[in-house]
Amino acid sequence: MGKYWYECRDAQMVPKGCLSDDGRRVEVGSTYDTKDYRVQCVLGSDGFLTTIYKACVLKGGEHDVGSQWDDGSATYTCVKEGNNVRVIMLGCVDQGRPMKFDERVAKGDFMYQCKKAGDGTPTLNKVGCVKDGRKYNIGETVLGDKFWYTCTDSGVKVVGCMFQSQKLLSGDHFTSGDAMYECKVTVGSAHFEAFACVSHTGGSAIERKVGCFWSEGDIEYTCKDEGNNNLAIVQVPHH
Image (cartoon, rainbow, N blue to C red; front, side):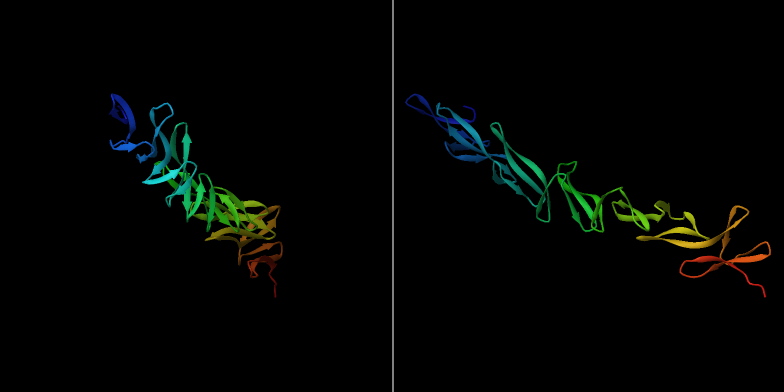
């Protein structure tokens, strides 16, 4: 008789209960578990036996329709769809806190997003950086006062220097006043280093190294390091 069992009484088939998936007899009103559901055996008002889905079952645990729970790595809910019920994964668990899919959280110097991996498991993917309390996506470029940097999956990386709102890479040169400067990038920072003077002769700009001497007419000049990253063109006195 399919998934139900009956008793023959006075030449009549009297419904007695249901049969579980493993063939066990279940009395009317009682429940049994399958791999994914908790099922109740019901005798309808029309006198026919039927089964109704009462709750979801996941990893041996029963969960009522509408409830939410987690297993330490993922959050779930039990939903009713027509006469059926099923478990839906809602998101991740981060240090005991539930997170919905696509939700982001800042942890230390990075931003993480709850996503579903290819095998269906929830995972926290690194998607951004946290710098001075502000959040940036991986690949995003940020301009500072003295240098500019980009957010990478290994953290904020200084890329170059800033000069008059322009982005310079390590090794790029620029002229300010009578000095030439080079952008130098170090771990976590960048700075300008003066390395030469610039003289202007006949409308042309000529690079002069520190300690170099040259004449313009009867006057001799030199490029002098005056300390604190400052270079100056000074006239050489003659005795």
